[in-house]
Image 1 (cartoon, rainbow, N blue to C red):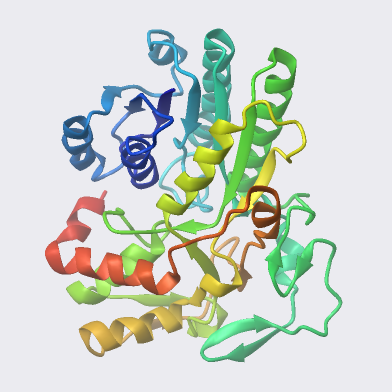
Image 2 (image 1 turned 180 degrees about the horizontal axis):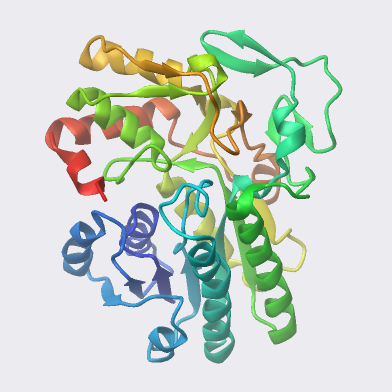
Amino acid sequence: MRVLVTGVSGFVGAVLARTLLEDSLVTSVIGIDNFSRPGSELNRQPLKALGVDVRFGDIRNASDLEHLPPVDWVIDAAAQSSVLSGVDGACSSRQVMEHNLLGTMNVLEYCRQRSAGLILLSSSRVYSIPPLAQLLMRVESNAFVPIETQQWPEGLSPLGISERYSTAPPASLYGSLKFSSEQLAIEFGLLHQFPVWINRCGVMAGAGQFGHATQGIIAYWIHSFRERKPLRYIGFGGSGYQVRDGMHPRDLARLIHMQMAAADSKDRPNRINVGGGQENAWSLNQLSMWCEERFGVQSIEKEEASRPFDLPWIVLDASAAREVWGWQPEFTILDIFAEIAEHAERHPNWLTHSQT
């Protein structure tokens, strides 16, 4: 089985490419990347040395895909990946649309021409913001916890956000474009009869991630703590109690293996949540406490004002992935913290690779 990974020199793309080479189903891996992300060049030669056919390419340019050889599957890991994309000044709204929607269209056209299946990496941020923002919270062990006795919107529970929860706007420009890409991929796959699997991923993290404050937050926080860089709790009174769930891309790779092996399956949902879940949920404050035990005490600045689209609690309920695929994460959140910390100790100036 031949596989193309877009965004192959990003953190997730690189981990997936390396893991795919260990997969008995996979005979070859091609990867394309425009190498625009700071630090991504560091992955080019190591991937080549492992046997990945790494090529320069930008999914926004259809011609960059046209010359690629045929493959059996495309894993689309290329995107602007911050919920603040298009509003924080780092890129324009048009650039976000070109990356996250028009780029998907070009990938879909490649799949049609090559009769390849598509595995699209989507996001937990496709889900509607207002009901999540209005959840009633209490504080437990330095983290927000939803009050279980409140009236829960459809698709929300103490286990997290399920696939039944609303995707109605507002969900951020980033989230709405990711959802539009999902819709486009499903329609295109049905029309042209190739398989499409969509994985709505939570926060992914691990050693080698190029983190900064708006994406790759776990790696950014741990490296910053070890390097004694300034850190801030933003929003929610500057408490750091906001909660996310974490997952390692190698766990995602196990699900992708099953999806590629089940191309003709008609009885499984083509959209599914893939996240660490309640067991791997953590707050920034809890992460700081973990870092203090490893690296020593550090002062954290506080900024009470929230940024656009900040939410107190985003945890994915991945029960469907467990029921449908028999999948659940093997890496715990503490495994992920420790892996990143070990990498930070081996690479004492890692954050310089993430600077723009």
